[in-house]
Image 1 (cartoon, rainbow, N blue to C red):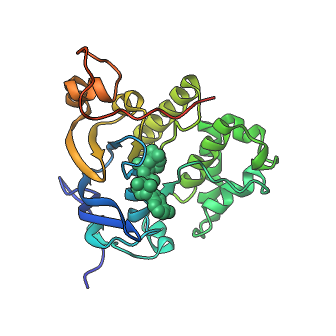
Image 2 (cartoon, rainbow, N blue to C red):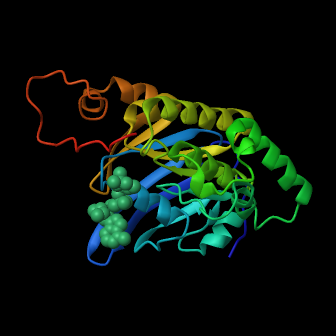
Length: 265
Ligand SMILES: Nc1ncnc2c1ncn2[C@@H]1O[C@H](COP(=O)(O)OP(=O)(O)OP(=O)(O)O)[C@@H](O)[C@H]1O
Ligand SMILES: [Mg+2]
């Protein structure tokens, strides 16, 4: 088998082709094809249960797909071991954050760097994430379980950065956060993309934030991509305005239901 072919020109960094994943009899994603280009932020929008988390888990090797293929930097990573995939430069920020509550903030960050052997680089990256999220520096010695939800989200993103990835998968960073904190976190995500050139695949229910932060977007319904375009174009589409941005223009709701948004605090 050929080894890594470095992505160049228009060749996407990440490519999914007809990927299907299931939990026993439940088909969660049904033939998903999508691409993420180098240094862009791409987003997958979808409501509860659409299959967003399943897409990310399948990419990062937590779930093996039943069908289809996943290519990262020209290398086939379909159904590879999660540790191998992280080593290729692909980090996953899981839904619901999942920090290690009994470890200090600093030790959580070091856990993100466990595959690295460049001590100087790790020290530099710790300072870099403290630059993005100064609160983590203040709380460096404190147990991560004592952080607020928003701070834990910051830590979770930072832990992913500690692996020095070229691509980050970001699962609903807005989950459970106030609009103000969501905005702050999205601003940092965009900065990370612009300043470090890190490519980002973001999945979100918060279409407004995601479409503003991202370059290219996909809409996922019941495990299928039903629409894709630049985010600028998606923002202008009536379906998106009505179902995802809450700008209802007609008196009647369509066939599809917009499921209840998650609560925030
Ligand atoms: N561990 C599991 N076992 C069985 N079914 C699952 C499991 N995880 C997810 N599912 C089902 O797979 C489908 C897709 O779920 P997924 O978690 O990918 O959706 P999602 O788009 O991330 O939703 P949310 O916005 O609520 O996080 C849903 O029907 C869900 O019930
Ligand atoms: Mg999810």
